Image (cartoon, rainbow, N blue to C red):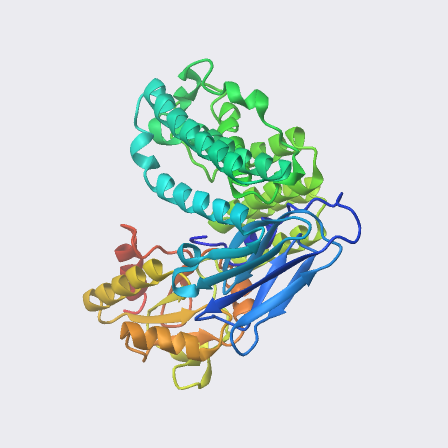
Length: 473
């Protein structure tokens, strides 16, 4: 899963196990990992039901699942994850290479065929999603024709699979839901691309039956709560229907997805439409977290948090977001960057403050995403040549041994002088409010934060660097 959410998104997706299965049923789950990033795999059935399974000296493992809860499970390794369906008497083995996590993943054993179907469908959906930007500029009827044809093609493929292989009713339900909710998601996403932020008020002008499928949506299907397509649909749906309130006064102002009133409206809509606590808590958490990560106003962050706490019944979510608000406020411009221990290439443990002696760009990265860290390191090199008075340091966020980190740097022939690892990645991820596979913070010579969520590829990065340099004059 590309561009994973480092802290909470991983666990919040893994909520699809059906607790109604009979007591005493078992299944086996095992595998082999090539180039492991650490020495364990975590298997999730829910946020409170997880198993940490350690690899042996051959980087293999086998795990017996007792008192099986039939449904969607997920496993993680080194920050990446995948979802699989586990049913009674399954004995599912996989093999993967972390250098190409999803693409190399292959299942064998009892229960493998259905999960190989899911991984193939997932990879096809990834390719399809990359092409969506071109489709969203089609006229509504053309767009409908194109994505409807894709949906029908996938359903034909699923029907063929079911005719060749013996599959359970649960598999058929989840596989069909994956197809349908991907189709629904594209419909929910469409107006944001077609109209653009400046003309989204015209979403009301879409054909009357454009969202007719909404009558078929079950917002409370806990069996699908571990399904990526279902969760993605829910998030885009509430983003879409929240527009009605946003433009109810008839104004034509540009759409701001980070506006407080708009996000508070989404919170209210989620609470009024979703009844299932598991699903509601997840969607509430995700929407609130996205707002907090992008907020630069303490009072607005606290207002959003208060609205969330009023609706959420998940203590773990509540504690997480309460701490997140504190962490993001501590990273607002003007504050001193938190002191935290980092490890250099020679295994020396130093304080982050000790390596900041002039304006500095701090780039936190994950070894799991090759394209991301290669592009970002290239941009860091380019910016360094343009701004020689600026310091640039990179910090790896992975919870792994230093050998894997050093191997990555050596393989790519990156200079190691300003490369570090966090001594305690889990603590650092919370302290620096790292949500995705990377984070960029710009500070002045005294460690005062200039920008806490910079983007190396944005048009603003030069201005932000120049601002930091100007503070040094």
